[in-house]
Length: 151
Image 1 (cartoon, rainbow, N blue to C red):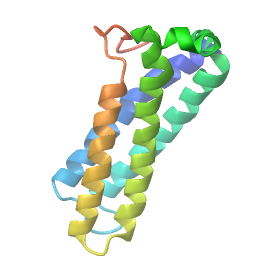
Image 2 (cartoon, one colour):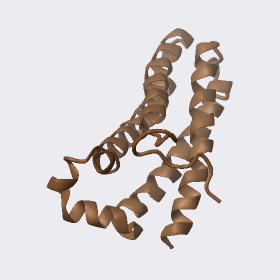
Image 3 (cartoon, rainbow, N blue to C red):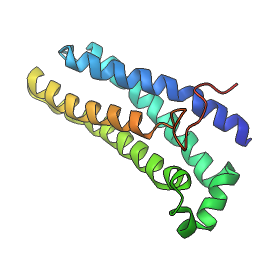
Image 4 (tube, rainbow, N blue to C red):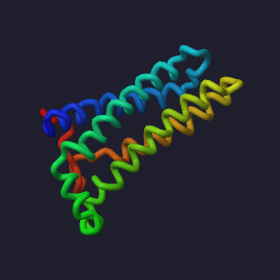
């Protein structure tokens, strides 16, 4: 089960990254007017992808990952090793904050009185969330890196 959940999590990651960049670019381009704007559609895809990623990540973190079970069992020791600290704290924190920012951004965007206010709110939330997603991704070549595509 661990391998299957990890495989799905790693492939949905690409959907989340594409959606984050797409939503952010739609906001940068000013495509925010109306309830069915391009930014809103990208934002809905982003929220969906991040929610699925969150559920899969929590399943990995709390239930099926033997690596995380060991890290949690020896948390103090794991904090001294950068690779283990990334998985136990940095990855988890960056992604949780990104999920919260995207949800908050969608709510703030819907409540905005003007397109300019909507754009500013979405830019702040989607922009920071996109940066956190990119920073929290285990890119190949880093100490904690993983393959770009799992098969």
